[in-house]
Length: 271
Length: 265
Image 1 (tube, helix red, strand yellow):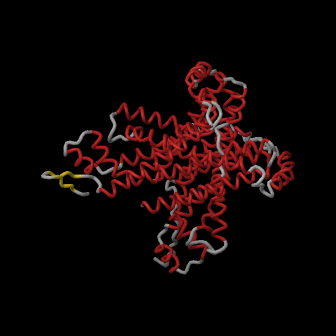
Image 2 (cartoon, helix red, strand yellow; image 1 turned 90 degrees about the vertical axis):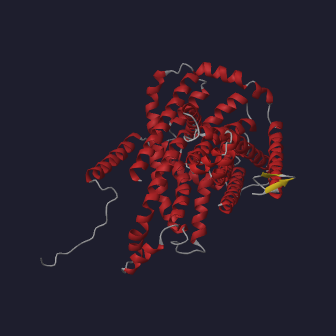
């Protein structure tokens, strides 16, 4: 942090000239990229609709309010399905993620050359395909319904849990493992008494975190036919029954808030 | 006192025995009720297995060439959308995250900002996209607005948590020099949260690109629209090509962003 002398008084500046110039160039480039990208977007946009959107929004709100509250009773089964998709999907995902994480962690993998890259590839490809796309594929294979949603959520969760879990495994304390080893434990015993207790807190918090995310994801897999409240949402939007759509949205908000409350409770109980 | 064997037992995860048994009972009743209420059509699944096989074989070989123009256009549109949406989202979430930090904002601003965050977090991007497409018409603009809006919830929440954890003495030191509010934020708070800020922006860039692949399915532009068109035309070879392109770009983006984040740390 330089102090610049100008004639007879000193000024403090946050950065020196070089850093100032660098900052300026970064800002300039950033603005340039931003405006270029925005220009490309705007050339593909019909601005008339965008400028008209506030009228559209008011119109939509007028149709959504008041919500058709009676409709809620038909939503009980779909929201129950949604919760199940999230819960069972998370369970399946984490169960598959555990061996994958052990195979891809640097310190537990049986072979660094062959198995580790393979396991990492499984993790990354599961992570990079969104659960909606998984659902889109699975609906074609197992047919529309809750099962497709469960598998889609499960497949998407593998990557997420696997990645966080193998990072946790790589950060374990080696001394504890050595201590277990010194008692003459075999490989399986080292695993259960040396590694598992160390990653158990991370594992629980990861799976709870993923469950919270999955509640949200499970609300949309239905849009492509994979069960849960999304099917209702898709149907009612298709029917332009906006008074029912607003009930669905409110239900989703309640479910999300509920899941967030539960995760916060469990996390507090564990930590 | 003859030799009484001392056997060590592993400590249970949950100490309270009653709670432990209660939880197991609760979980098993839940699982049973799930199995009783979920209709799984095994007939359909058995039917689906050969169909699924055909379906998966229809993906091979991935066809990058026939519609390479559309794939390229979709990818670039997704990239623009991602960049613009991340920047716009971050610019909006800076004031929101300042407002959502308990140690900076007054009570009513705090609750207002937390409300914005909760609103943006409670809906999945796809649901938001349906509404923004309805309001603003098809195309990348609606997708961009969706991504910016969902960026706010993510970014402001995590950044405000970081702002709440800043060291008070540094901020107070700036205040004691007689700085005004903006100088206080700029010199007292901002330098402390900057590493986290950059890390989060890179992380969000990565997420936004991934999400841009799905919001296209409901009309939000980008590579998702290309994918959806390919599915609608039953051109599975092209869909496979699009999926491979998405996976590889996500891998590149994720790899660079995690590498950059490590560099900054």
